[in-house]
Length: 497
Image 1 (tube, one colour):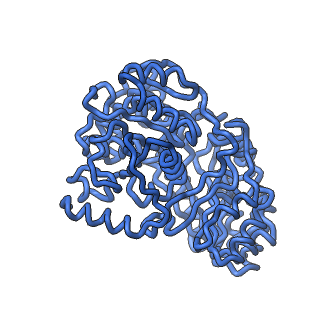
Image 2: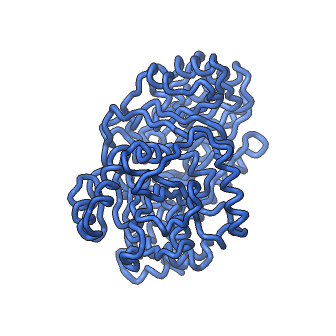
Image 3: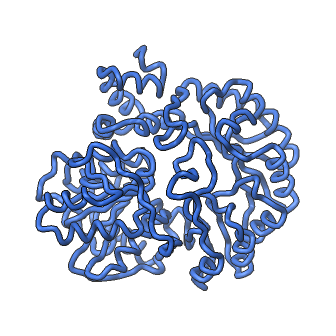
């Protein structure tokens, strides 16, 4: 793609945006997302930080994103607001959602002529400030790229850090000041991770200032109903012990922030369906003529009134979570979903004229056996007699800061065998859709990894970014005994290669 074509694409997207905050200020930041525009503009956290920076006196940000595809990568990323290369800005702030986005960060930086490794940059290069959902679990691999990392909720802390970078007499002075701030990880200064930040409750809820048809969540106004979670699921980094559990946003405040012209509204949070007024919120929005989407639905919270409100809000598929393949596995995960909840969900979905029931679950959970998979087959078969069923499956990936952080990744072969068993057992009865076991292994290695694994991502990206490139890069770390053990836990057959 030529620079002219890229600029034309950006201008067309800007023309379709509603709510953009255009602003001039002496201190400007390149706010960068390491995935394409369509993903970044569906990230409520990214849009919240955009809004907070634009509200700060003397400060403004311009957005930049990873190229849409390989044909765009020949032209370095530029900001949407001024079409300037991101290397021209004093600070690049980036939000990283999960481990596999580290590759996108490397591509964005290197395409801009900026060394990805922190140690290879000097005063000629922008300061790299990172944050995002990844910091709730393990940002250590990210630490080889970022100069400073905001841990946890960045609603106000991001602006505080940017003030330091604006006002400090030198980069070293800025690093020293940042290293003294709570919830800020400065890899060149710290040997341990600080705790994650919790923003002030009066800053809630986050809501998206920009709507665009070119986002994954097309033309959708996103708003939090709550922050955090009161539940204790053993695999989740947002369990009740993180940031004081769940903080509820009053219904009146939520409804008052939804623009009158919004026709699609996304209710966002780790436990949206646990909001005590969720049925009333969905009903009120639907009666305004809004299509309503929820980021999470717990089966034990579903009721006839709730499912009816979802139908009124445009739901055609009722999506909730089975979580584990069997009752025994769900008990291990400390999930409240029981067969009676899922059976009732199927019945209510059919009653309200929905086309299907979609259930999310994990395979490869610690101690899982073929018997657990067979129980899933039998139970899903029963549900499919009520309504067509789709299983959305992800391999279990152990994360730091969870009770299951020491668990091993089951192994690519094990996960694929379990998926095959499910597909065979449910052939003609339910649709089984699964994410890649190979890429789940890559995620698992990074989720438990440190600086060495972060550096290995660079090698994998430079080698083409395929699974085999990651496999080779991670295997090259094996000579250190402790790391070999870690990799063997992630994928047993590594030891034999």
